[in-house]
Image: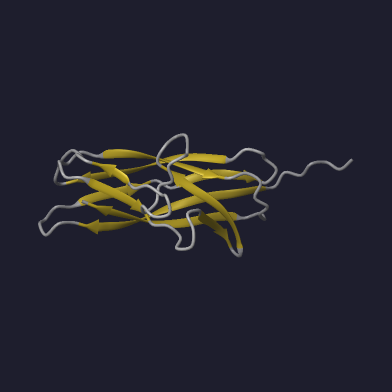
Length: 152
């Protein structure tokens, strides 16, 4: 009988920041994001690999609605982690149960929305990441960059 081999993959998602569309005044929003670090991915594991992180914003004006979009791949709702020519699917969600895909509002994805953010006070928004199980990928350090778009 052959032994089971465990292969691991190191996965990290960097969140790129794009700041932002403001009104014609001097209103601004500052955005910071921590990358999702999934750690090692086991191709033999039967459950998904999850991770959590945060995105924080602070706006100079308060009381105006704000929405935050994570730009998506143009061809589908799933995001793609790459290591050279190897790739695997993952996604980022707004909720801990990982049912609301955080995206740009297209293809069933949702935007983060805050109808009344505080003035000059940092708001922290959780990000929930998931890599589906049973993806047959090679060893490597997988990563992705995402552009964050804030509208206020």
